[in-house]
Amino acid sequence: MLWTNRSVSVDWIVLARALSAIGSYWGAPLVGVLLLGWQAVKRSEPAALAPFRFGVGFLVAMLLAWTAKAAFAMPRPSDLYANDMARVVGAADSLHAFPSGHAVYTAAVVACLWPLGSWPFRLLLLALAAAVGWSRVALGAHFPVDVVGGFLLGGACVAATHGWAASLKRAADGWGATR
Image (cartoon, rainbow, N blue to C red; front, side, top):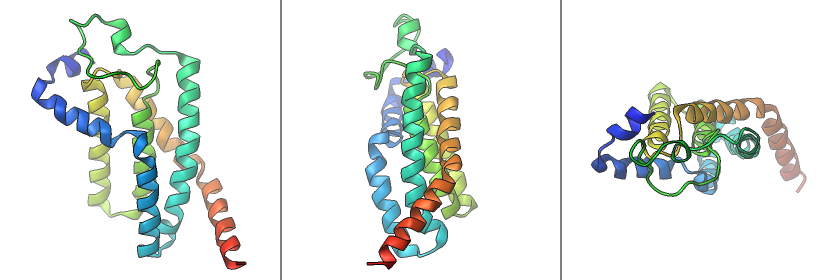
């Protein structure tokens, strides 16, 4: 962690901040709207299910992430290292580090978009997720384990809630058919 954090030149901090902003869960409403638009344009079963997978998976993942942050109460790098050891850029989003909320959100987005694209698109998603994870360590906000844990939690929640999302979609389809 220290090597990644300290080896990032000031010139790369701008990129790290931009990648961190892309991976911020504040973008969830925009992703939801884009998935709804894609659903309308594409008219395929994976596209129709994607907004539901994202909505349910993201909500469950973030609730579990916030619960895990409180339960584990893992410190952030700035809480453990002096400023001369780890560079911290910006203010922390929350008090605790594990799991990274940015990584949870990014993994949820990747898991929802995965069935919608070809292999080149999927490789791009993986590269973007890795870049967001790198940004969180480079900015001094997280340890690598926080990021990996966040990726696992976000992806697992979208996968685990697939049945709920499909049921919700069927209910919405049924409700729309009765109107």
